[in-house]
Length: 173
Image (cartoon, rainbow, N blue to C red; front, side, top):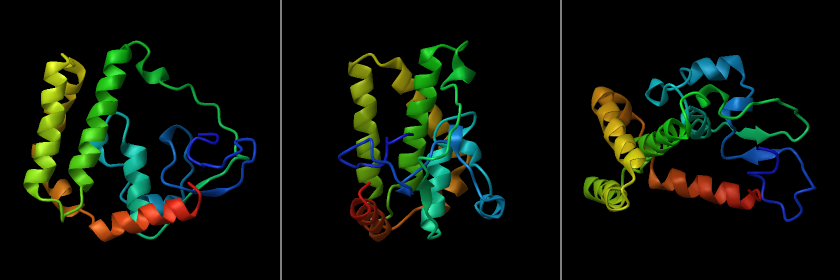
């Protein structure tokens, strides 16, 4: 995460600053806030997306996620998936992206707009013979059906998205 989300023209200059999200591989959380947010969302199990989801819900409560360049963490990226292969990792990442879009796309977007967007992504994957994305799409929609209450209750307003976007732009992120 070193400098990845803090957009300063000189990446050698690092300072503590708000960030849209922190990676779960090196995230430190206040226990009470973690419990208040009800932990990690099980729809992202076993990995990918749960960190973005956690940080997004924190922002929705008015809390900030902070990038601290002085922290040092040893993290073996993708170590849990070495034996599964790159395809499994890509599947989990793409499924997490789809679940996040389905879960949080703002309410003002019509049902048709959201599903046309997702359907076009699916068609693209079929034409490109991208079986990983196709399988992720199917899996995400199965999860959505199993956990439909989560997807209904977590919608955010378009105003919140605009506010969050302007905050991150004003902070230099």
